[in-house]
Amino acid sequence: MKTKILFTILTVAITLNVIAQKSKSKEVKTKYLSLPSYDISQTEPSTIVAEFAMGVASFGTQKLKDTKSTCVPKNGGIKDAVEVTTYYFEIPVTYPESYLIAKSPSGKIVYASEVSKIKKDVAKFGFNKCEYWVSAKLKKDWTSKGTSFKFSVNKKYETGIYNKAIAEAKANVYLSYLAQEFKVYTAKGKNFDYTDLESALEKAQMAYKNIAKAGPNQNDFKLLQECITVWEKELAGTDTENKKSRINKNIAKGLHENCARAYSYMYNFDKAIQHGNSFKKLFGNMHTPRTDMIDALLINMEMQKIAAEKNKSLMTDISALNATAKISSKNAVKVLKLKSTDFPRLKKDYMLFKGSQFSDIKESREKEEEAAIASGELNPYQKYVTQIASGPAILMTMAPSPLTGFPELSELPKEMCAIEGLIQIMILNNKIESIPAEIGNMSELQKLDLSGNKISSIPKEIGNLSNLKTLKLNKNPIESIPKEIANCKNLKNLSLKGSKLSSDNQNELIKLLPNCKIKF
Figure 1 (cartoon, rainbow, N blue to C red):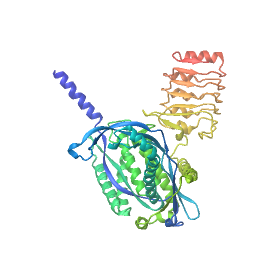
Figure 2 (figure 1 turned 180 degrees about the vertical axis):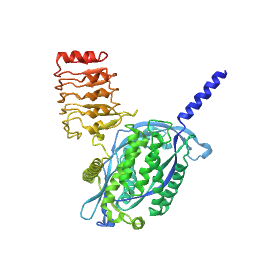
Figure 3 (figure 1 turned 90 degrees about the horizontal axis):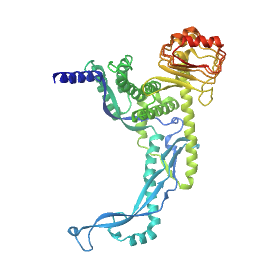
Figure 4 (figure 1 turned 135 degrees about the horizontal axis):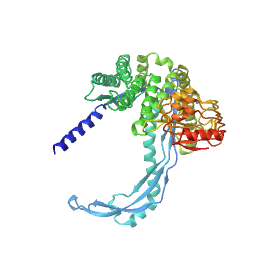
């Protein structure tokens, strides 16, 4: 019995030790000063006119239903109420999407959105009405009132969406304060002192609370920068492989999110996007509500970055920007409610605007990538790497393609050999003629498939790949394989179909790799 108790205590102790360092958070309610997507110094927001249109709702065939209703007999009182069966019609309804287009006096689209998407619902005619205690009366009234009922249902829905469109136009045509609620992260654990992180959390809460009251200002930006300094210092010590480290993967996720949000509030979008991408990298290709939220935040930050570039003259003075926003908050946007016949035109305008936005974001990303590659901050082949949920990464591509952007290669790039954590490389049907000696640095590589290239020889450094399990070099004019391949003790599959290896070379390989399945 004592042994069992001791085992339980040890198990709990070990478990607590493993999960000792955890992320924790506190909710923050604040507001963000959002920038419009056009230069408001060139186009006065009050001159912008918006248009709204919705398609026509469609109704299905009504179905007779019944329910229990509490009814009072004629000339009776509440005490006389009884429960009776009443009838009603349930009608399927499909509400169409709707669009909002805002244009300058010159006709240029400055904002566009799909205010509502297609929505399927049901409408109920005569529901819970005591007069329909017999179905015949319900059917009779439907004959005379059905059309007007459908009209009123559609009108009510459209009015609700139209009011949403008015608010959306206001928020995106002018400088606007948008209410936001999110978490600020810190850490807890018995093995380390997280006082600095706790202090940063409290300071960040104070800054966001002040911004909610007074809008963006340099004093609170200074507070957020002090927090960022703490968060980034801690992130420098991240150990993603060790759950018991001071800043493990889960804690690092929260700190990157903290930095992304704080930088975005300070309009430093390059840094914000950098931390947002670092957050996503820690998650790999996993999709959760939290990663979806960060994806949305990243897109918004990219759009705000473009908006900030268009409003450079305003961004030099945050106090003036805030003052302009306070004045703008009292203004309204004229939103014309158009007929459903204008719906196709607005939908077309929306698609054009979104296409333009996509091009702007793509161009911005390409410039950032070029700058990062030029500075050495980014490996040019990192973008082709897929991170799997458990952590390891793979690089897989077929022939050079304008769709993927993968280039035509004459050699396996040295930069690719410098990517950390790669367990698999597959580059098929390209024009690779050689493999650099740097391949030997890829100690974690488990699979290498370079089939369909122009490789004639393999460097002796291939023998350094102690974790290599599969090597495929089909359809390559390979004439020899270095004897160092015998050092690949974990190699189980070697495929050399279509090579130019002589029978002597083949026999030598078989002797060098007795535990490997070789295909010639």
